[in-house]
Length: 640
Image 1 (cartoon, one colour):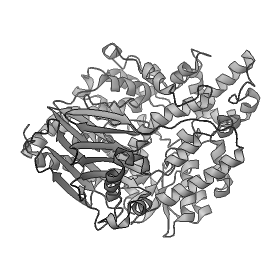
Image 2 (cartoon, helix red, strand yellow; image 1 turned 45 degrees about the horizontal axis):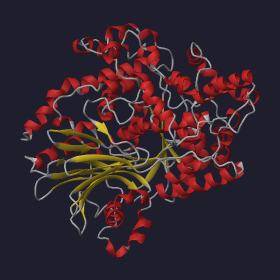
Image 3 (cartoon, one colour; image 1 turned 30 degrees about the vertical axis):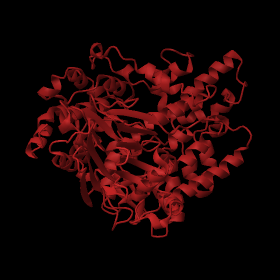
Image 4 (cartoon, helix red, strand yellow; image 1 turned 45 degrees about the vertical axis):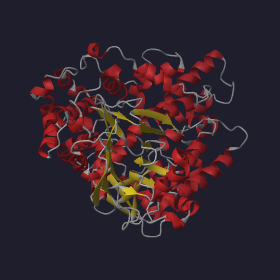
């Protein structure tokens, strides 16, 4: 796990001050790699790579950027979990190191761009192909590892984090389509970011720079080819096998490993299975909010730890921590995405980094197996519609209103959201209904200058993803989970990467192993989501590995944070000050006076003020400090 960066002249002309530019990029990403750094520049001066290293595999000989015997070079961030098997397949005698980095180089020599189909893991890398004079860059299938890029003055720049690109852009501006996405979903879609001119390489894609042109291609997709020929027992047995196999691979490390343990189903599964496989004393980490019992999940974390017989490290997270650290969270995030869970996860990661360099977590389980209460809300509406229309028992996909009723108790804390969901548009097409369910912009009116954001429709982008050709249209469940898998999950993985790497900590996500994901996509929703029971197949398959109190939980809500209590209490002055600066009150696109007026009206678990706070802090940390980024290149003697 590391930080990567680099640049290439599209015309293959010498780049002035190339090495110093790379050193600046490394400087801005030094938190990602506290164990070492390296820079490579091509002998003709038209390309170069930078690297910051967090040593996890091959502590002695894994230094990067790395070359092979053919003059190819690579800078790489991630872990290839099947690197040992690939070494054997490629021939042990061809390797000079024991690192997974060299496995990518050798795989590219043998298979070219098709090497990506042989890699099992999380990765983002750039590889210079000397023979063909090609820059080949790729990102893993799920977007676990980041890759951002921009083109400025005929130069292609890339990095693990956007902040490493900012010294080279003409100016720091907001991407208005990206901002519209954020206001609607609290994440950006289709490769956009909140920075104008800076894009992310989408998960499952690679790009090549050759002869002055940039080409981007997809190399992986998940297909929901549903298997109606097997029983639930068959799927349960195979899920057990694939999860155990994934955990086994994700435990490969030359340094000690631990786990995140929230007390929810997914992190409990990962921790329980890891404790059975790991022989070196697994420890787990949990964060709780003292003085806020309704947000306290430590009971479940302790139950799982006791059940597995492992050591649990626990940290109290307070409003003082929020005031002291929230700016750091936004800085490390590059731009805001997803919900308030980023803050407590940042605190847990900070604490865990004092004890471990690698942690396993449960990210991905909700999007793969259906763990969000909104799926139940959407299905409940469809059940009512089907009962009225008399289509309740048609096909393989309909959950009847009789069978869903026992599970509706799960929605006890979601009545305000249900009320808003049914306020308008009842029984419309499924894509319109799900869009309405996840659209957060309906709560933001006077706070945003919507007139300045006209001309772009997030709904059209949403529809293209929601109705993808890889999903069968009969299954509402698969359409919903697929959209979240393609959009929300990468946003959550952005959080996962940034809050861990901010502290030099590698976060691994065993649910996101592509054989497991591809298999799960074949499970029919009437098995995966039986009777509207969230994660039904996962609970049934993993029951032997978990205490009943974890399997039977109905109150899990992600990583709930007492923001409304803090905003109206001890953090009120702090938050008001953020929105009250002259710069904040003069924003072109956001009316922070209106935001301040609504501060006292934020509901429990609400995300409106959180979203606007993150947006304002982002502008203060980056837009308002544009001069500081320009000074970086001046101080280092880098001149365009």
